[in-house]
Image (cartoon, rainbow, N blue to C red):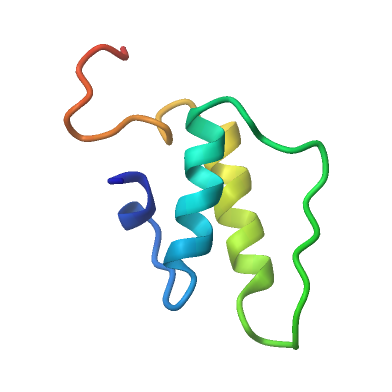
Length: 68
């Protein structure tokens, strides 16, 4: 998936890929609980996921020409 490579996430690629797949499939859960120790990137993942959901061009892939 091209979407996860647009964000500078180190060590969270698989988690963010799962979230972005859910967003592309229209299956975003009503609530997400992101937990863990301090300074591991929870806020960063949450901000990038919010950007993915809220920005119009975030869900475009490089090879997708069907979207405006």
